[in-house]
Length: 192
Image (cartoon, rainbow, N blue to C red; front, top):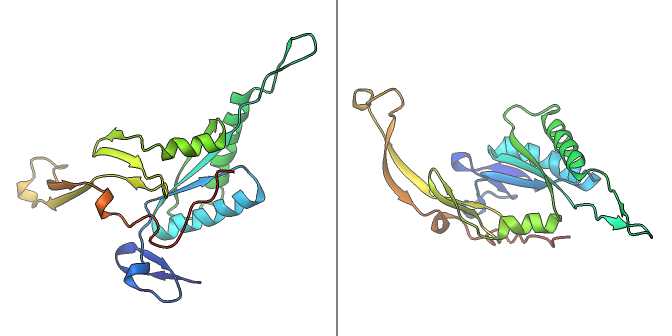
């Protein structure tokens, strides 16, 4: 397989570029547990993010430590989860920023919770009100579904101020404009 450029910044991963094999990435979500496999995924995701112009979102999710009792019923105190999660967030940020390729745009997040529950929270279909309307993550492939805003640019003498660049012509729902989740035959793996 090789990467082939398509029109308008889209990319195809195929031996033969055809319009149906072209796609455009906006966001790349990479769960990181600091294992060798997740480090490879992070390395690949960084390169793919730069090549496609997508924002790389790296997330570390840690299970909360169970508090157990000793034979007398007194709790045995676990390590401080917040401190560990905070340090892992710092570690993750350092990994992404170290020798970062030019053009890499990324976010990092560290959460305490059962990792499959964190993933399921993205899949819940919960709609979030944003400045462009309702947005949510599609369960089948974790793609962000958002309205598409159609604008027309203004001539300089039609601008009311220096930030009045365009008029909104129409706001379209994003879901019907997106490729189907199974368009490329990909399926998400299991939660664990």
